[in-house]
Image (tube, rainbow, N blue to C red; front, side, top):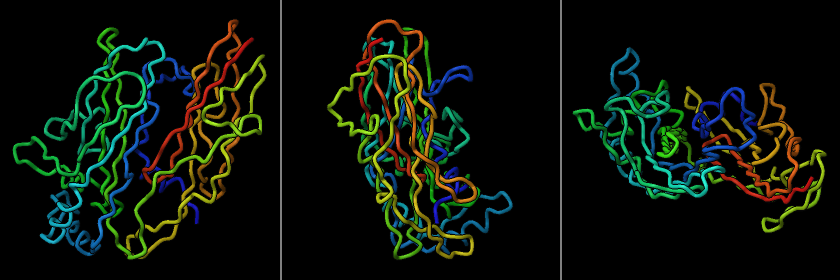
Amino acid sequence: MRAQPLFLAVLVLGASAACVTGQDDPTLVKDLRVLGMRFEPPEVLMRGCDARLLIGAAAGAVDGGSISLPPQFQLLLAQYASTPLEFTALVADPQGNGRSIDYRLLGCASRGDRDCNNEGDFVELSKGTTTAGELKLRVTPGIQFLDDGLATPLLLEVINQDTFKGLGGIRVPVVLELSASDTGEKIYAQKLMVYSCQFFPTMKQNVTPVLPGLLFKGDPWPADEVKEVSGKDEVALLPEDFSALEEPYLVSSLALQPIELVESWKVTWMTTSGTMSPYNTGGTDFVGVPGRHNAKWKPDPAATEARDVDFTFVVRDGRGGNSWTTRKVRWTP
């Protein structure tokens, strides 16, 4: 069956946050903002897991105590925690004129710590300066230790603070902090990196979702083609059919039985001029009906001069995997 929104909310809690206020249209990218973040691979699948080990370890933490992992599971966790990951963030700064932006990449123990600053509960994975565009880093959050006086492994504390003690995946919150010294801007974006136990032999590691293509007014829109548009009429945009790419996958029930699901991709639509409608398309509602992916771009009604307009389309598979596609339009009044 198609994954329901409740399940998606658990795994996609780390969809990147943006610098958008309640009065802004989130589809319009006009200031410093993180449009998307991803890890490659999007999931580390730990083979050889035994769910009973986690069940037994979690039993001691039901009444608020700390989880105690058996030695077998600790060894397994250490083996896969060292998996190197490629982190990529898409940073937009349309008014920055190529300025330098300070960044810090942080790993947190609590998903509720949105700016990752709880004392003794986070680690610094990387820091430096960047500019608008793609920020690429090589990181290994799984082998980090907290500065809590006990040198607690980050993964262990993530499990300890998880309601289900890792049964739904060890979801490590990773926060990107961006600061612009010339304006005093500071924003945060959170993404979950998932470490999952292979509870069943047929479970497969998640693969990053990628849109196969886009349609502009029903016609193919190649990546190197700048579309010419004039006037203020809405323009229909669609992703090419990707239903064959939505992966079937397994999760475990609380009774340790396999549940078969199928991904239901969501697409987020953003532009640097005008607005998109709707902001998100796709996914599956609570009664199992998949959403449609038709979207429309409305040019800026106040614009009077020709301009280049950039578009970003972020696709998410509901399991922690995401990627983005960009396109450009040359608009004239």
